[in-house]
Each structure stands twice: as structure tokens, then as C-alpha cells.
Length: 331
Image 1 (cartoon, helix red, strand yellow):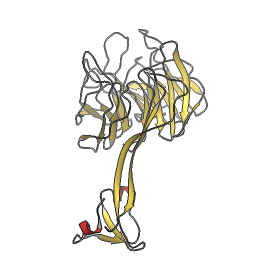
Image 2 (cartoon, helix red, strand yellow):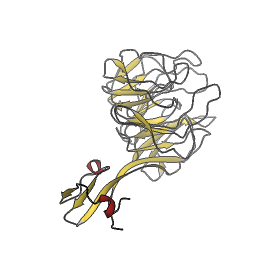
Image 3 (tube, one colour):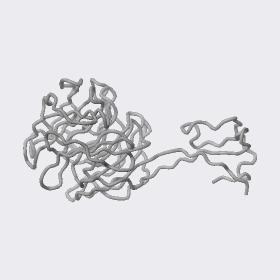
Image 4 (cartoon, helix red, strand yellow):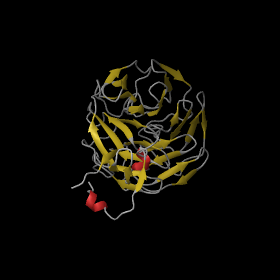
């Protein structure tokens, strides 16, 4: 931390109250009310959270760090239909999905969630069914036009009444698809096709400002694509290709984490990347390499969770990026 001597000779703004966290980041100022030099210190790190009651992999999530939802998944046998709710500290069991499934898409909040597609079992054709969660129970809704699993329908890709589903497998182990579907809370309609066949990517943003990140089009890729509700355009590439990873955010502020590396012998990842609207930068590594977990957070890169995954395992990791105001001291 900077000392008074290091600040001597610099022009420092005097204020009567501390700036907001976003304004304080990387800044130094003098607070005339407390008669103290202060700075805004950015901290970004992963920490341990509460364990799921049921360990699972290839599971789905939605919501935020302090109001999250995990549902479905795979424990080997049988495929799961259980749901769990997260309060930022512990997971509690909720009501079950009507249809057990894994590798589906998760959208929305803890009290207005959406489970999209997925598979009822290994090598089984995805039925394309969709369910909505109201914070208490799941109800079946109109099916996808194209049944799919392993699509880009991850957290933050819209809401319960304005969602998007992209790519995926329509008939495993068959070919990937590239079509896009938009949901209005009642029906699914076809949109502009994705630039290539794709699966297992991270879909962030909203229905009219979507952001598809990395994934697999036959091999893991680093490319990204922006969606404006009608058309897809090329975005800025990530540094590390990954599939079945976690992440969330928007077209101007996003995070990706965990997942699986490309290649004939893929391995689970711990790496994290942050996006500022122009470029991706590496950040703090997670503690546990894993893929296929439930991931969600807000429409930014400041707070999220990643639960379950490879194994399967039950542990949760929490990502927090925050600015802390520190008082500078004289040496």
C-alpha cells in the first residue's frame, strides 16, 4: 500500500465523502471529513462456498451468487431431477423438475427460472421440453422447435420471458446444429442461424444483446459472437479455448471460468478470464479444476458461483470482484 511519502508531490483530489466503489477503483483521494488519504483497492478472487446436498455433474444453474438455483444433472445413474436453492452460504432442497435431464440450458432467477432442453439419458434423443420455475414448483411449457442438449443457453442468456437457445446437439451422437431460437414466455421462434455449428459454449447477456463465448464446433474454439436479437457478429476472442465452462455477464463486462480444454485428451480447467468490452485478461485461478458444473451470476463479472461438475462433486466456488476503500497511513 502507498505511504504518505510516496504520495508527496502528487496532485490529489479533496472530497467531503468517499466515492462509490466503481469510481474509487485505482484512485487516491483526501477525505476532508475524516482527514485521511484513501484509496480504492480492487480484490478479485475465488472462495469456497456451501456444498450441494446432491453431488452432480452436467448440471444447470441460474440466478445470482446470493439467490442461485441448481437443477438436474448426472450422477451416473439415474439422471437427476432435483433442484437446490442457494443463498450465498448454503444450499437447500427445492421441488423437483417434472423431467429428469442433464446438459440443458439454465436461464433466469431463483424465483423465475427456465430449464431448456437437455437429455434424459446417455445417447437418448433430446425431447426438447422446457420447464419454468416460480420459486416453488416447476411447470411444463411449450417445447423447443429443435430439441437439443449442450446448447449455449447458460445463465444470463435472457429471462424467463425473453430467452435464447443456440446450437447444441439435436440427436447425439449426431451432428451439432447452428440454429437460434428466441422465447417470449410462451412460444419459441427461429432466429438467425449462428455463424457455425456450435455446442457447449457460454451464453451471456440478454435476448437482444447476447454474447456467445468459446465452445466447440468440432474442436474447442476461442472465438466469440454478439447477438442483437436479429443478427450475429464476430466478437473478441478469448485467450484459452474451453467448453462446458462457467460464466456470465454482458457484451461489455463478462467472466468465463472452469470448463474443459480442447484436444484428444482434454483436462478440466481452473483458469478465469475477464472481459471489459474490448479484450479478455487472465485473472485469479479457481481452486478446483472442473467442468460441467452449474454456474450463474449477475449481468457483469463481479459475483458468481460454480457448483458441482466433474466427478461428480458437491463443492461450490464463489467469485467476488470488489473494490475496498483503504485508509493510507504515514510511515
